[in-house]
Image (tube, rainbow, N blue to C red):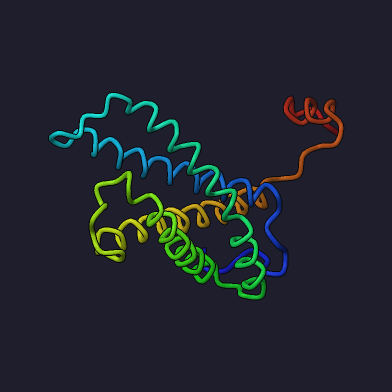
Length: 169
């Protein structure tokens, strides 16, 4: 995974979908782990933990979709860069920076309330968000490379059946 398959070819809709859904899944797991830890802490037992988890998953999905224009602009700026690692690091930094205002708005509902605006814990959350976005970008690159290695599909379904049976001539 040293270089992008073709830096001049932008991500297709399938690549963007993989990146967005992977970011959403990783972000949802991270937020779910946070709410689970909050609920299991002494005096933190939420009666509505399921609702918090469901709301958080929807909120993270909406935030991922709202972040898509930033991701598109970043990808557009990096279209001539061939190193995959540069893309992954840039998207990780973008995810970390973009998550700071979101975490700041969500402070009243977290245990971070009352801390300085840029506390170490808040920066830690931003770093985790950046890691989620970077990991999702890496998965998108891996998924794209895997799709490009697949042999082309036969046009006619009958040809596929004959190929599978080994009787094609």
